[in-house]
Image 1: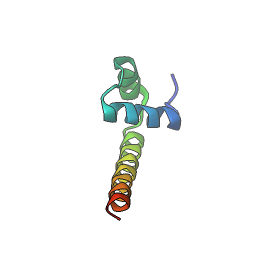
Image 2: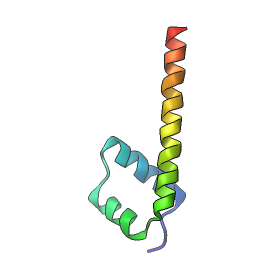
Image 3: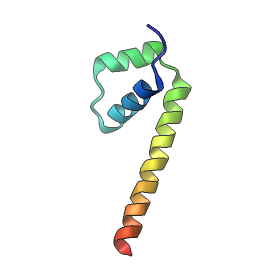
Image 4: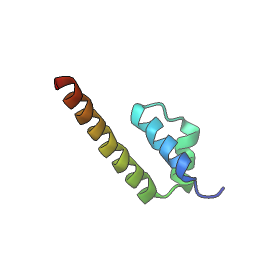
Length: 62
């Protein structure tokens, strides 16, 4: 199998973040994935999540 695509990495990180990652996908990630790719996507996702929460709170509090 080749390296996972960027879309696969994003979907895998999102699934792992909410706790619904399948064992099959986890095995593919560990066997064929690149650790830096998962770390970068995870950090970007975390930053986007924080900005979304800040934006929602700012919008609600006016």
